[in-house]
Length: 532
Image (cartoon, rainbow, N blue to C red):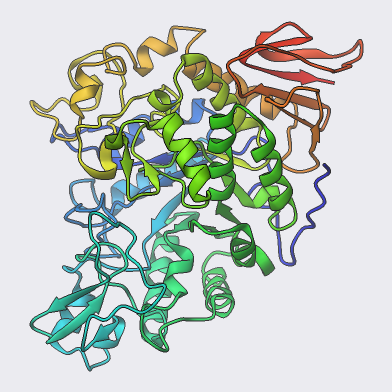
């Protein structure tokens, strides 16, 4: 299969022009605590930027750092134009940005534009006068009747999409939790506020935005005339932001089909989308120990979205959401990766972390290598490069949100506080606890997962493994995904059985990196990066 996707009109290539691009998601609250209050902060993250750069990171994605009660990990924003004082202030953010830029890394921040918190000044003003200009920032209704297709995002935790506000005397729409009222994207004043918010952060010095729930912003909210033409909306937003920063990067987060997501990269509206389609197909391929689901997904994506415009991940920040699989496919994945009902959430997701879910350890290593080999830009969340664990005793989707494990000291070096409320119990005791799984230990171990990730990053850059121009090779083994591009062949065995490959590499072939590979046989969960 040859990649034939054309560059879309307006595509500049600035976002992913480097074949070694790597995005690293960083939750400040859980990364490093410099002031000893038990919560991570900007100063702590700044102190560890050399470590981040050593991974080969080119883009840092900062998860929400705005003032918030953090009932939804900061996505319940109280003020879009400030830094939560527990993380620092604007000067601390500017220092972080400067230090990242000095190390050749650019910074995306989360733009939460679909909703606010119910403590936000916009919502407080709307409650007092729902029929005023302030009131039109949100979606109101005299009743809570639900239209077809209008569904909550967190079934089992919050099953409603309307909540009654007694002061306003009516209901407001919330697709997420009740404490997150949806903004009304049809209102021109809302659009202008969005422009003002994003322009402010560009002037502070950020390089771009991960637009949270991008398509949900413009989709209808259960009442007539509440949907927006997404092309027009994002075209106008892009144009206005380019007036502030010409090379601003916009990344769309939306768990939708490639065909819907393709519209977001047309005419340069977005540099890239986060690719849930490939992720779901990856999980199905691993479930079956067969490469075909990945091959099928790559063909489909090849016809819609350029590889440069796709962010690939194995596990995102919260649950592993498998809503794009069919019911039968999802059942297969659940039986394989989450056999206990406590591991499931929302009827579509798995609460487990990457490393615990992918055991044995050989498969964890193989999936890390595979992430870097897939066409597109790889995305890691902090700690995944170490193989951190999870804690299913934690309710909801926070089971896999661990604090960073720097060393084997108390709280894993994350904080000097007497108590660390964000450190999960399983991080203290258990096979993935910080006494055994931490940066310091893996820095000194050439066979560690951290060392493997660094090596793959270097090989990927050195071999010029550009995101496009790839083909899928038939090597006579259904369990093996073989990708050839730019003189590089990557081989990944998705099964727990060794296989012999039908492969003629020639006399000049050389393995730049390989595990359980002898030139002909690829062992269980084996992989190889071969110059051809």
